[in-house]
Amino acid sequence: MDWDNKDNYMKEVTLICWEAYQTLTCYYHFQYLLVSFYSDLDKINLATGFFAETLKAMRYRLILGTSKLFEKNKDSANILKLLNCGEQNHIHRDNLRDIIKKARIEYNGFESEIEELFDYRDKLFAHQDRKGLLNTDTESILDSDLWDKIEEMLNWALSILQEISVACGDHPRTFKKPANDLSELLSRIV
Image (spheres, rainbow, N blue to C red):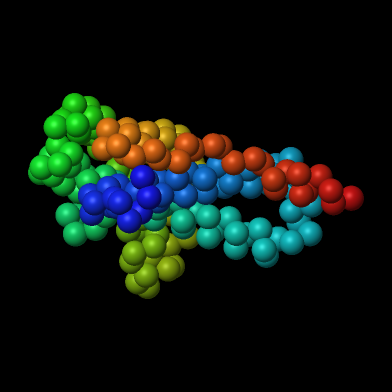
């Protein structure tokens, strides 16, 4: 279904689905970069400043992108808002009833991870006060149990958004895990 033929609900589904797609893609590229830090450290060290800033930017994108998807604010575009709007949408609600019921149960299964994600986001990115800037002991997300769940959360988000799209007559883009082109690039450095 092309953009002009989508109703407002389907346009919102498409935009949130795109956010999930982009955030999951970033997750895999972030993983590839971390692996390269171990396997190709000598090559990474040729541009430490670039790779350090890239790593920080990707972490920022991952945390904020995932937070946006799982946000609970009714004023922002997120999964919960989409479920609520789907229940009230007279055009799509009959097609979405079972999907929404299942999605709410599964979403609630991520409750502790969602709270931890929001705490982490707020601690590191939202509050730029003196105490936060001076705190160098902040636990890394890479060392937390949350990191192990982010991929699962993002895959779930994309999957449920695609189910909603299909139930409403759309044909969403199929997610394809990105190639590790960083590994290819680094292999060409002698």
